[in-house]
Image (cartoon, rainbow, N blue to C red; front, side):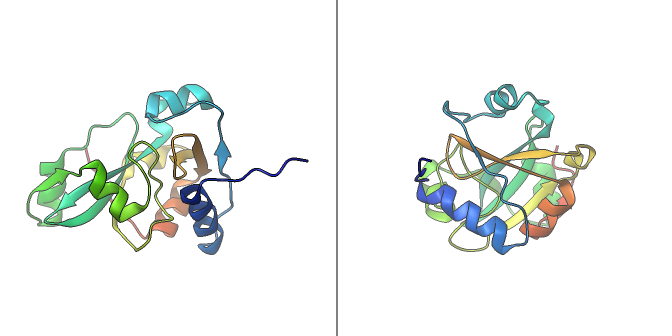
Length: 159
């Protein structure tokens, strides 16, 4: 039996999942899965069931939007719904500073501090969702209701 040493961001996600009462379903792949299309191909699922963790800069604060892999987030629509100012795509440095994870592997949980989170309600149609688990080689599975619960996300249309 070999002992697998996980990168710290993935270990943080695993700890967060169990601490929040979710199952640890983290799967580590040999090949990188940094995009929704790559993840869907590796998992054999619909790209719409991939939950992208997209970090935005909302007036200097991070905003995490959990969106379907088949969706393009409409930041103007989201800003209007939130009654917020301009929402901008965050730089890779901003993402790493606030999540402890690199773009392409950001998970919905396992961050150094709680991040305001929105959940694309179109994901509710999928029995199983897959989300990044902290790096480019890891994903975890979860149901929509559990994802909403563990992230404390505000559910809304984001397209």
